[in-house]
Length: 121
Image 1 (cartoon, rainbow, N blue to C red):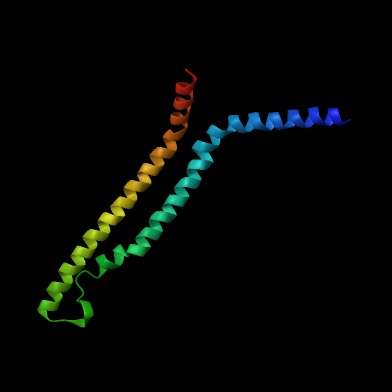
Image 2 (image 1 turned 135 degrees about the vertical axis):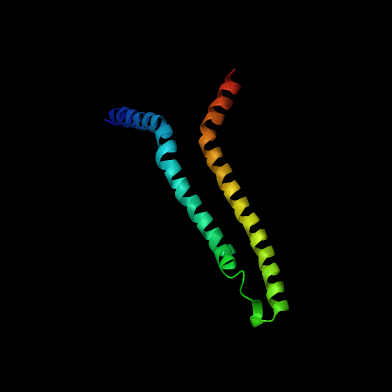
């Protein structure tokens, strides 16, 4: 009885293991990449929200601190322009990082298989 259960559950575990190994590439390039893209879209959305780049762009010609004289307007414009440039570079860095993460995700299985083959030869 015990020997029967051992054989039964061992084969069941082995079949599940083989199924998981064969299904992994399908998952990696379908649901896995979909989940990754959703997560990275949230990251970029939160980064844009924290940088408030659109708010800075919308208010570029508004004077800061209620100074409506021409000096206040000029200073406000250039300070906001510098803020927009710096925040745009930070956002660009985020886009580049997200692109690198996606490329790494797509290439990782090939790199792992290459390393396995390299170690075996």
